[in-house]
Image 1 (cartoon, rainbow, N blue to C red):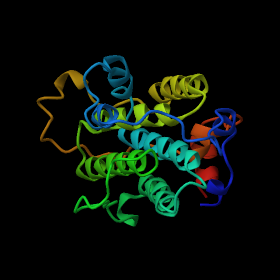
Image 2: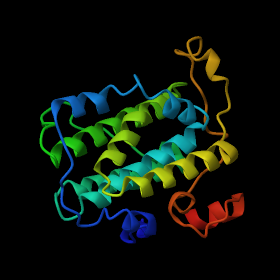
Image 3: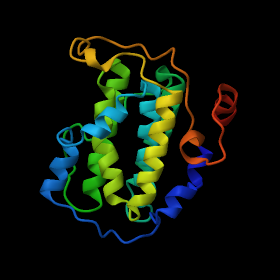
Length: 222
């Protein structure tokens, strides 16, 4: 994906490129990102308003925030980039991509301010990919930890917050969830078919001049 060679202006504005790795990282932080449901009701509610393909697109965009934050700090970024590209491909046709398996044997440590956040990010992305392929009605819940993680490692959090709030508002309008989340417990084992949902592109998240439409999205993808 050629666009991944161009840093989004909002990520530059957030000072994510080349900024010292100076955020706090502890066992409590790790637990917060791995089990984030408690205390994040507002974020959970906002995420539950968007459909499955929008959820995967947001996953790719959040992973890109993390990707650029660690550019120059780790060799794992090559793998991260491939996963971002695979997520975008899966939105077009899930059959065109393989499952995003990561650290199946838990060989990588979640400690350290570089490997730790990357491990959690890629593990979260793996779970989102699994739920997308299964058609799980609860896929949106898996994004909470990824949102919190991307925000935590971003130097200028107000820039990230503004981007996220605007993104979620437009996603709710243009890519609304197709089922009632009040019935989530009843649908826990059910399978949702997202193949009918409209596709979404990277420009939706990162190009301030992008005007969303079916035609514009198809042009951006192709």
